[in-house]
Length: 300
Image 1 (cartoon, one colour):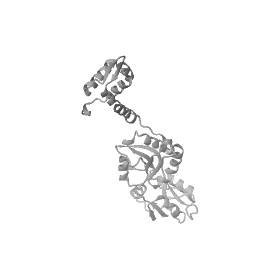
Image 2 (cartoon, rainbow, N blue to C red):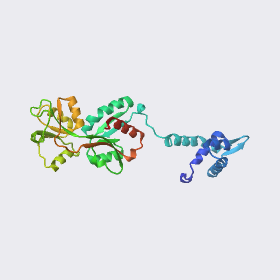
Image 3 (cartoon, one colour):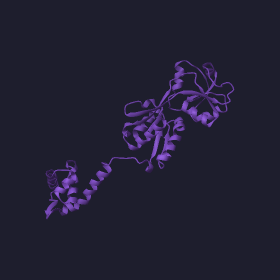
Image 4 (cartoon, helix red, strand yellow):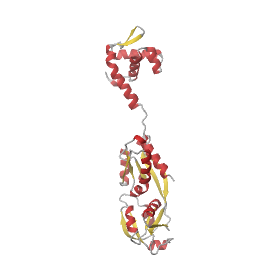
């Protein structure tokens, strides 16, 4: 028998007949009319070339062929009900899932502590890992499911096939060591351009502020160029260098080191921080839960 020509709804009717041994009771259980149930039984008999259910006293008894099929049909029906038709759900307290977030090291510094704290309460057995990769690779990772979310500044993901949710605007500020000999409370444009700078340029990432300076022909002396934001702390606390960084990173640095935050005299556009996910996982309960956690924690 070719399954392509078989109406699988007939298996539901078969299972109901085995259970209830009555066309009337089986019809009631399935919410069908008695004629519709009788028609289903007739089609089953034709398909299997067997009477399947025979009137014996007040009941319809299964034939040997029907009895032989009953257990297998029940398994198929239950599998469809429990594993295919059952709405998927995510149970945070019981989950042992490992979530993967794409974010640069600045994202790890800012996002992870609070996300981990929430997970410890809401999903204590779940795990988290982060990946940092070039912009073009982020698209492929989200499409394939290798990553659940991308959190940060990902201009290449503002495209069809991806959802996005704005979290906050990240303005740029300057940071120096607390006992800097010349830079105290304020920083003029002249002093900023005359100072020596430490610049962070993560590999494969967009360098928006550098492009902004070039577009206005503003030159500054870059003494050191590094790839990771956290390398700034030992550098700034032991030198007279200035770094221009997003506000959230500056706040973290000021909490963990003797760092002073100064307003940047160059008013560059603030960076919009979003979380992104692929449309394939828009309705996935676990992905929905993780997005909700991040939006709740970091929305402005």
